[in-house]
Amino acid sequence: MVLRVSDSYEVLRRFAPGTALRIAVELIHAQGTGALVVIGSGSKLESLSSGGFHLQGTAFTAQRIAELAKMDGGIVLDDEKGLITRANVHFIPDPTIETNETGTRFRTAERMAIQTGNDVLAVSEEGWRTAIVYRHGQRYELARPSDLLASANNSLNSLERLRRRLQSADDRLTRAEVDDVVGTRDVLVVLARATLVKRMYDEIERTLVALGGESELISIQATDLVEGVDDLAENVFADYRKRSGKKAVFDRLAVVPIDELHDLSRLAAVLGFTDVEERMEPRGLRALARVPNVPDSARQALVGHFKGFQRMLHASVSDFEKVEGVGRSRAQQLRRFFDRMIDLGEA
Image 1 (cartoon, helix red, strand yellow):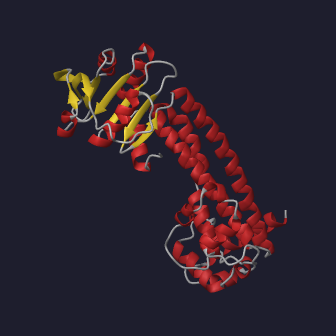
Image 2 (cartoon, helix red, strand yellow; image 1 turned 90 degrees about the horizontal axis):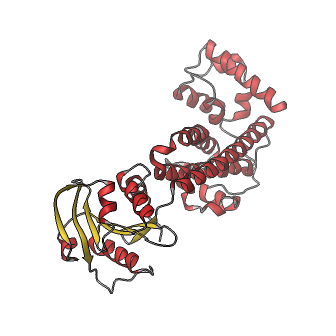
Image 3 (cartoon, one colour; image 1 turned 45 degrees about the vertical axis):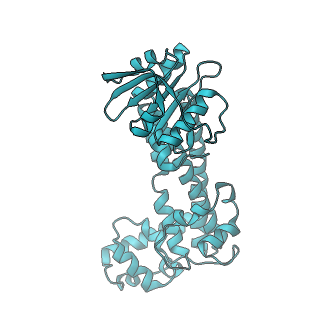
């Protein structure tokens, strides 16, 4: 099973490296004892707990959890109150609850999580060191910090490559716009690559949550790489879309699996384009978004006045001045911008 996003992020934060719970896991791994820890409280949990002993006012620390894990029974931790409430407990969940786990400890943990609604941590005591958190009938295996760091670095390298490919597609679209030879394919390639960048960043962000405080440098690099991608995709889509609506482009494309983002026909259908090979002309919103200090009202007025990018691209200063909200200074700024755009397109 796959964790729901909200559950997954909460589990990742709760057990991130440096947290007391994660330190407890590492200590238990080091001493090779294994553990079964139910995190929470309530009458349902009490009814499924037998034997062991109650603890009064015992503050939760990673070291205490590790010491108590040396006994055969399970542990009950009320982390909202910061207390260890029971130890050496025998948990007796309903044996008819289905589980795909094989080891007794892990089968018990999954059943306890399902029956009580509490998070349950199971740590293996021999062989490959495994720690699994069960929540809402789902499971999350805690990766080692070194593995998480390696995964984050690999994903960051992939994100850099995808960002370069997006920039290349964006540059090609700009040249096609200047030459008035834009096809739907050019637009879809940019949107597909922007979506790939966004999803790769989301995957990195998940890993960074799991890394906790050890992720700062990678987080800065990843954030820098994804900066502006949302605006780029929205501006491209606004420039070419045929249907009105407020739904963001990434929300529209969320129905497309990552391995189908190369299928431009599928993307065209989702986004409301009729033909992948159709010739198109932008409205000019994307270009105007790159002109500094032009308010949205002026951009909309320019698009409404020229009714097509090519007329805007070749307009004179006096033509720009005729648009409401565009004075002499801004008109000259626009003309200089489009001159540079023509020069770059011809380069």
